[in-house]
Length: 96
Image (tube, one colour):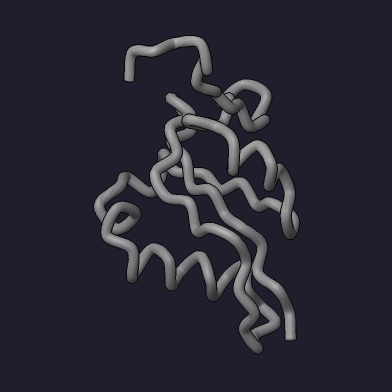
C-alpha cells in the first residue's frame, strides 16, 4: 500500500499554513495526489472556506523535517523560495 506524504496547504501570498495533514497514513489508493487533495478540500473546513486560487500545496517526504516540526514553535512556507521556515522559542525568554 502506498504511503501518503504530509501535505501542507498554504496561502501563496503570505505563506501562512492553512492546514497540515500531519504525518503520513497508509491507504490502499494509488492516485493520492488527485483523490487525496480533492477529499481534503471537501472534508476539511479550513480548506473548504479558502479561496482555492490562493492555496498551494507542499508535499513532504516521510519524516521530512520531523525534528524541526517536533521542536519548533511555528512554521510557514516562504512564498518566494517555496521552502519551509521554522521559528523556535527562545529558551532564555521567561515570558510565555
